[in-house]
Image 1 (tube, one colour):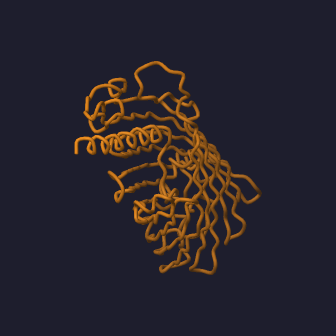
Image 2 (tube, one colour):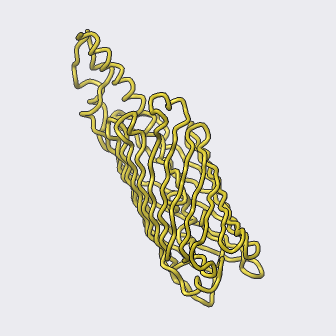
Image 3 (cartoon, helix red, strand yellow):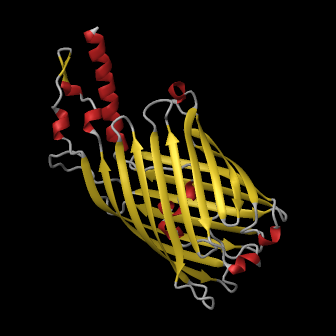
Length: 346
């Protein structure tokens, strides 16, 4: 019995070490990537139709397999120094997110500040070019008392205090991000937006090991987004989108389509009451269903991931649940025009 117990603990130790090493090298992700615009791309700071925007997002995943991975994010941004006589403007905002994952309670608390400049081009100012810069502070920690290490098991017994003594329970660092985004409105019924962003550009050191080493810092995360809004009649909108990102050896591709239906006054579409339903896929990992409603500047979105990867045997298909809440304070002009300028609605 003692030998069997030691074997089980050793297996747990190996899994803990593996998850610890992989988790520390990657950033978090959301299925509703449009629900965390400043985390997705700094150029999206202030990129919306309205006076200011407040967002919140919550994600809970893998509860059927292990200790749930829980992520929360919030942001506020606004259009700064906006002049009704000049289309160009500066956007500024703050964002914060917290992530807790795994049996070792690996925690990530990050605060970000962003600035983005939005330049309008074309004869009718139907093209917008946005450039954003972002700086942040990150604190990561791990609860060593909840982890087991391979060299703590000897001759069928448990001897705590070996590998764990070489680990710092907390690391802190600064990070720098940047992004660009191009929006284009082609008539009253079609607009699209393309963006590219780079995160962790300074590749900060985040090793938990006490000893000096030559380890390369946190890998840069590069992502690209493409989304569009197509008005199919007065009440129906199609919003296809795709997002790809890569970091170190990990990559992610999400693609899908959201269908929106206006149940309120279609002449004031940006603040009218509407409902939406979407279907998405995260390649090689999950099928995602989204849905929700919009009313008077508020957007409430729900998402559920059905796991399709090799982990589905253990997870029984259960992936993650996600909820987003966004409020945009409308401009007076929103009541007079259907699509004011191309912005991140996808």
